Image (cartoon, rainbow, N blue to C red; front, side, top):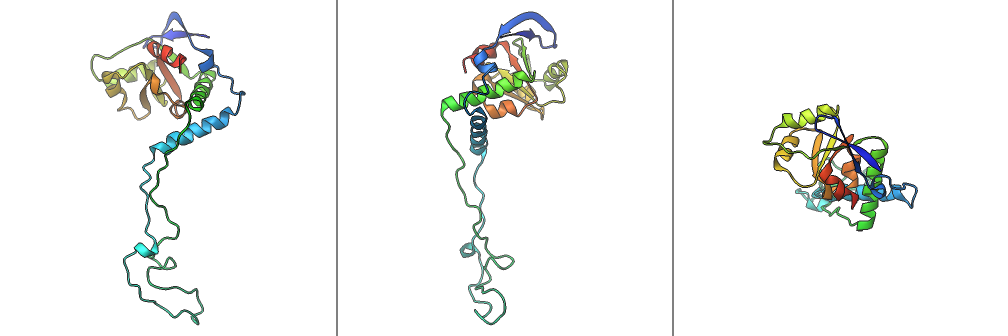
Length: 210
């Protein structure tokens, strides 16, 4: 399919660029695509977790081991020392322990999830292809002018570049609802977690082959 190419002022340049139908018009009815997207998003979020959570069990609590009350005849539940989970300040029963949340997903499934996400955004008219650009110096205002040209200054925007441009990166990263990413690093979660996507011309060829 062919789509219009815009300049950074949001104006149609009159030129067209071809988007790969296998990437931007993927058949969402083919196979269990929805579940594949779920697995990919779950894996991405899991890989971001540190997994350093920890609570102390009764054997790790610092306190006396003296038995507080008699075993029977008190009319209540039996309990031992002051470290008992039944008491305030006692240990935690089956509390969280440090663990690794990372998981693996094969490349084909990740590609399907990414294509499904891009297809969904394209169908909702959330993707704009713009001319390649660069900034002479890092300026957040320069990026905001581009966002305002597309009426996206109050939206969560993903800017896709063919490679890391330091000046553009420094200009974008101060904006709370904006993110710049290399085309090769696109993933389903990042695509779905945005309101609009600005893709530079140089990134299209890379994405078409993902």
